[in-house]
Image 1 (tube, rainbow, N blue to C red):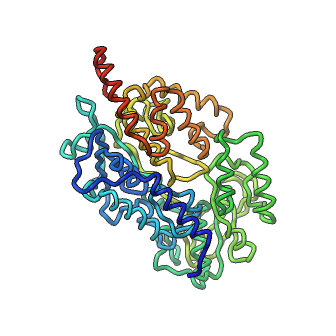
Image 2: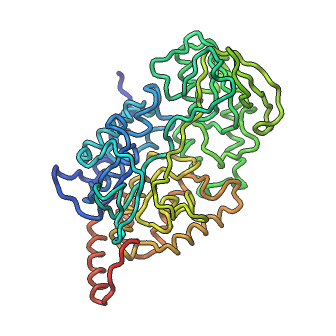
Image 3: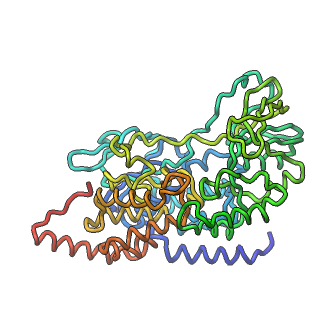
Length: 500
């Protein structure tokens, strides 16, 4: 392998970030302090949040429904050919992560998650094969996971993600199809060499499936997309610029990036760009090769509705641009030897949480900072309530959300009241009342950072926590101040209230 100066500099930057921002792993068998945190899910988010907790000296237990092979969440279940569509600089889910490529594959991502899990001694703190079915409180307000045998906890981090089991729709006549049918996550060991491949779906899974069939030598490929989604370049600078829309919605200036994408990225394929959906209304696909594959006649992208299967074809309602789903079109029969269901994943259920967190008008994702239910500030549903966004699920916000929870648990004066949390939700909905989507159905990463800064600035008792919350540095000072505040409160006869 030759010398790559950019990767060399990148490795040094990662080394510096690790030394500056990674919390120190606890020594073996160290007894950690309260608050005690239960983390549900041992995927990327759960392992990262757990490492932050123990690194800052707080006790934690990870609950994972699967066995150790499931460590890494969705990344433990996808194809070996799967990898990041965004640049790894935007996927730094922990400061200690050391990427060796700009777009790492599944094996490297799982390896980094596993190394993090081992580095912070989380093996003895993980309960595998333990599916969480209920989260309840005892009389003292402590949380019980399933039953008291698992202990009691001061806080909960829900890290079940947004991708669960593969979503496989039943299509009329599917059983009569004589060819192969696979979900896009089950392509390991398969080949499309010499076959006519039909890909059902038009999201990120379809892009990944298209890469698979082209790389394995398919004779032809047709992507049958029901909905229109924006496609943006696989370029870190472009992706970061788009995420700078701090308003987190369509604005009067949204036509500028949309026009630039049509002109310089879509070019002769501008017909594939959405007309009824703005760029800042849904999660775009990130890929720079798909248009070239279409130009090279290796694939075609068709807009329409699946009507059913025949023995060797799919009946398809081919719609022209601008016609909505299930609208009028021309019925065609498209022949294929292999069908790949790029239909995504079912969203994991949060039904194990207390029923009161789902009561309107403050049901998920309409929670404080999108992750804290107003009536239970000691619950943080990290990376599992968002709907659409321009940003990344695997970056520094995981640690920031975790440290917000720790701050709320240990500092009564920094802890938000239920009424204040609801006011913030109402304010955010008012500010985005003209957005084409609901206020919390779409956001950008810069809007998320604005939420974080606003949350700190609005309460002076949180100012001392700012370095800790944003970088994980300097927890000793705010903790010592909290201890003094508690002594003053106790001296005044003010009892320290629980977080609930």
